[in-house]
Amino acid sequence: MVRVRITGTGSYLPEKILSNADLEKMVETSDEWITTRTGIRERRVAAAEENTSDLAVNAARKALEMAGAAPEEIGYIVVGTITGDFPWPATACLVQDKLGAKNAFAVDVSAACSGFIYALDSAVKQVQSGAVKKALVIGAEILTRIVDWTDRNTCVLFGDAAGAVVVEASDDESGILSTHLHSDGSYWELLHQPGFGSRHPVSEEALRQKVHCLKMQGNEVFKVAVRSMSDVAEEALAANGLSAGDLKLFIPHQANIRILDAVAKRLKLKQDQVFINVNKYGNTSGATIPVALDEAVQAGRIDKGDLVLLDAFGGGFTWGSILMRW
Ligand code: UT7
Image 1 (cartoon, helix red, strand yellow):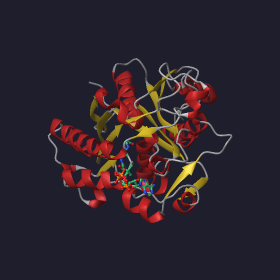
Image 2: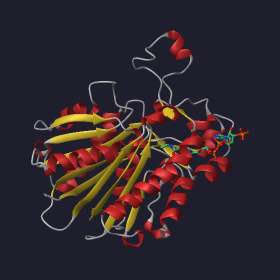
Image 3: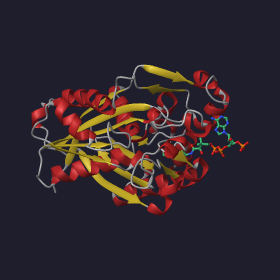
Image 4: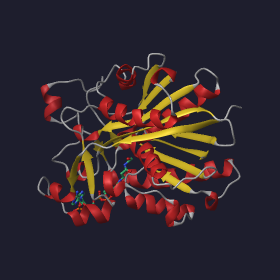
């Protein structure tokens, strides 16, 4: 089987910072509550003229540069997003146009916070099959445009960001070792955006009920997230005959520091094995993992040959892990 590896990473964070102190002026909350319950201190907010495809393109350009790949060399562009520029066409098509990646076919993956993991899995398989030589995988979100800014239960949690990777066939031992993906649609209602699909099309009444805003039953999501992320990490380790101690870095979806601490404890990971940046950006859904991976690479926390485990959980519910040798 052809081994596929990541040859470039990139990320983009909008400039504007929204701090917990800023939120204290908007809803009844406190820096103390947000920090102790979530670990989040600040998040980024896209500028009015920025769209999800712009964030995606900025991250993609950096990943392409690191990979030494021209846009025309890319055969497949896949964007994990739930906050694309439009319901359709796919944000990936807009990215293809903006990059001038005229030889790529392009599509979005809707798997909420697991979007990047699902997208990366599909790119790996496209390269493995020989259908494409190089693929561009992006996680990009502008969640601040679908949160209800009067709902303190959700508005303090989310932010905007994009991260990208380039994948291609590996010529050595490095590369993706396994992918494990799961879904359980019976949980769809715990985390979803009711409008404006076929169930709740646009109407004045629908707008009054804010069906365009994200809805979440946080504490229910929390419990399943901890269990599922731990189980799918263990599934990846067992499938490869490894133990948690073999990992150089565990890069989980960044939703809440208490989820990360609980998963790390279950897996018996040491503090320096877990990458955390939820304090700086909050939950950016499909963007958290590629942003974290890029930051880890830039910070020199991953060396050639290191084992890295990505682990995501999100609406659907969807969850999954990807193990790789860097
Ligand atoms: O991205 C993938 C999926 N998403 C997640 O993984 C998120 C999972 N869930 C969570 O991270 C946590 O459940 C939250 C951070 C959303 C909430 O934390 P919690 O410890 O589960 O709190 P809770 O929802 O049980 O609420 C506890 C209290 C409530 O007050 P009462 O009813 O006990 O009086 C809330 O109204 O905290 C209150 N509360 C707040 N207080 C101040 C909720 N949000 C806030 C807030 N500021 N922003």
